Image (cartoon, rainbow, N blue to C red; front, side):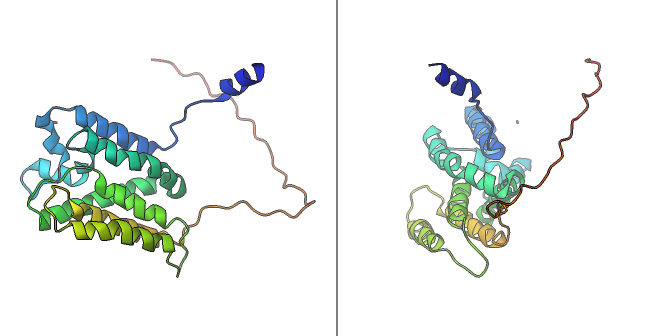
Length: 219
């Protein structure tokens, strides 16, 4: 019992994926807003006022209902932290913003309906995750399988009138593929192999001096 208490006392909850978790919290807050404010979080079919420009980036935060939101963020919370650890928070944030912007622009150019939801980013993450082990001049079989299963299904479903924007899914998947190939040469740092019996490199410990005391003082 003592051993269990010692282990449990060392456990702590960490904000391990700042971009993904902040994205999820922001989407929940937007869903709680009154309907009159939700047009700030939709991609418009044309440019009409400042809300239509803001919506190019903000539409992934808006969702039709709670089921829509939970369906998207179940995947984002599953895949997102892995991608954020691999690519870094800033890089993943830029990928999400670029995907949202490109999807919003496609909606303005080719669609005549409002677009809401993070499904484009979901498909971007799915395709990007399938390229986790990609190297230069190689195409992973997992990428081919995901492209065939997910993007192929969306291409066929594009001819159905089901109130789902397959265009956003296809654009998101294409963005994920592009990001995967662009980052193919960027590899995560690996541990340096050490021969058996070799001495460990010497390191110097630095003791930091304590800091000086400071006075406390949508329409």
